[in-house]
Image (cartoon, rainbow, N blue to C red; front, side, top):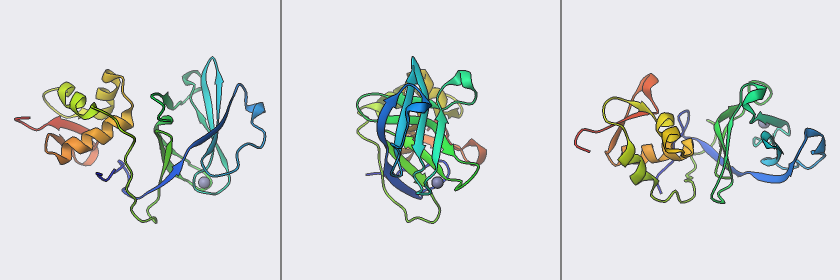
Length: 187
Ligand SMILES: [Zn+2]
């Protein structure tokens, strides 16, 4: 299995995201969040909030806004029975200052003090071939642009871009152009 490397760190702790309930309002949460990674999804016509017990173990609950009309919002994906994905990463600016990624029902906690841990997402089928086939010619292109054009989950496309880079098919930019990729000439 290839090692999965985030834009920020290669040190990961993998915790399961457990959605305990889907409710209509924050008043219905009660005491359902117990363990790190426990979560409540609030849906009223559309996903509004994901309230998650902090994966670091500090015991705080983190509200993640999923509703663009209510300000800065994260994207929420749930498809193919893989569990929830949230994009981009969540970085607390208070308390424990945890930084984590929610991807396919897993929470990847980024922590420089942890040992390296290998993790890859569930089977993403022929995504590598499709990303390769649709990658634009020319200069560096952000993976998010290609993910959006294809209607795919951004973390999946980033994973595949790194795989194609290891295979010598794509080339990743450096410095501020990290997470931007271009086709290697001849591929
Ligand atoms: Zn925490």
